[in-house]
Image (cartoon, rainbow, N blue to C red; front, side):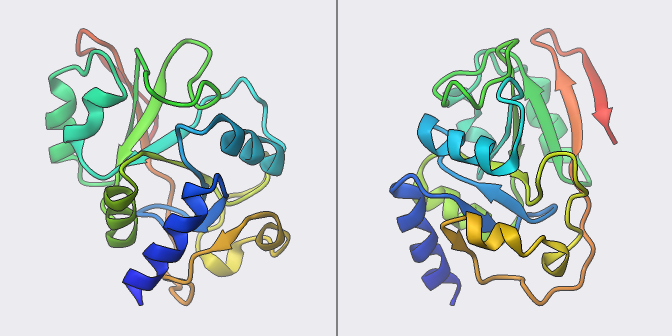
Length: 188
């Protein structure tokens, strides 16, 4: 079943579609993080300010250098030793859709530790956008049954994994990491 869901989701991502999917944190809306048109669809769907950056997911910290320049050395230790899902905001974003990157040139990246997401990103070979499955300004869903049913009609595919889980999930910790290694928590 996991392999089938990954294959179905890959087809949607490859054609610029929008997915609703489980992550290691909350349920998310996502797309190809390198596709401006797909990201525009998410901005419209969420009724989100267009000048706000997105979080993107990668399956391995080895891929950070492809999307951030420079990657502070401490980032690897922070990722390795984080006990909870950690999104790090890096300066110097590159090779991403322009509308994923914040106005200051930064991007939030999380190395995902969720089987479905890891395998999906590994097979897709690109990062995917991860924004909470809600309309901007509304509460993020703690699990699948908390998702506003209207969203199901606005996305191209709803991933059929973890839908019955009643585990209440929380958003990731967010940390801003400067090139010189200084950091500040934005959300704990």
